[in-house]
Length: 190
Image 1 (cartoon, rainbow, N blue to C red):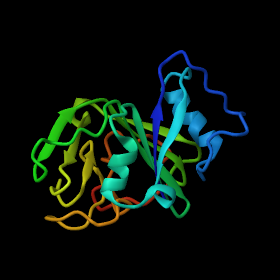
Image 2 (tube, rainbow, N blue to C red):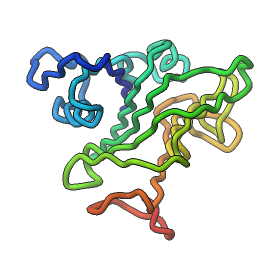
Image 3 (cartoon, rainbow, N blue to C red):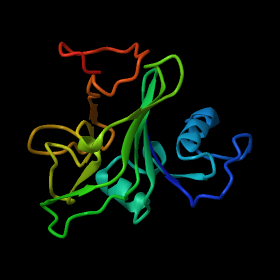
């Protein structure tokens, strides 16, 4: 499952116990509460994209996200719930076959399955960027690359997948917090 959330302006209270929110999401309120806390605690989150509801193509994601900024991408794979936050939005390049690379605040998180409790994973300056492919382009075989290692819609080195839920994530061992219990590669990266 894939989800995208947008956060509202600071000063808007986030109420975790509000029974009607978030509508249409299988991501639990406690997970959303952790993201809101990591954003400073005084924010609202709105579900703007859910693959099972809104469609699974890159175009579907772009249609739902529009010009919104402050996006949290949540990915559920079996018992694992993880994702990334970006301060920017998805800014397409002028040329639909090109890539738009730009700097923005980026951090990853694990909400379930990798740590005993939800965990924010912060990076240094080297990972504070976003690459967005045009509708006919590719970022290393994906539609979007968040930081260096989270790719959405990845299929091959030359062409993105038809389904935005095809993802690839690697978290470098150096910023990986203590307590990680998931798989690692031969270099110790998660």
